[in-house]
Length: 254
Ligand code: PAF
Image (tube, rainbow, N blue to C red; front, top):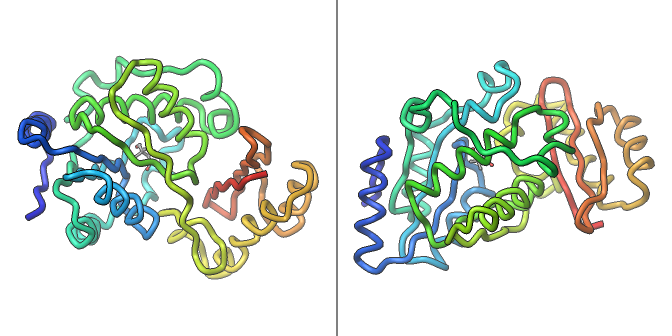
């Protein structure tokens, strides 16, 4: 039977008891609005660990735009049902006060790679992500934590943070899960209008088509996207675009 816990102290005690039993613990941090991409992380965690914890927390500190935070979907009951059906053992769903007793006076700040790409367009975003991930790791203390490659920059920064702070959690990178038409799965896809949804897979097609970042930027702009960036990093091409109010990111091997 899956446990649902909202207090940090209770989640910490629950995970400590699992460790004392000798269980290995996999962890999938999420902001809810779960889709097949999240479920693939939970399934992989279940294959590689005895027990799996999922967190559901829409983290306010990683939003620079209050409207964006407000718009984020929160289908909590459906998320719990999905976690239970997937076989998760624990859902940790804290309130902001539970994770930020200091009111965000203390935070993790990375001074280089968090400032470019997503970080340049969403000031403070990665401080919020890294801070909440470190807090969640401190409570859950997982052997392994699972992150999707769709959020490539996040994955790299979390891996770098785990190394920098000598954490004993292994960061496991998991391939992007895509819709049949190629669109990378994202909780934000639910916010697209039918017309925007029809255009959205063009992002993945343009990135997969190759060429210079400048040529891809032009192709995306001509298709009707507002382009935040298209850049090469780590042998990949990373992009962020906007369709109306919805921001989409994706990346593929270059
Ligand atoms: O990728 C996400 O959903 C979030 O950035 C994360 C890692 C759960 C931190 O809030």
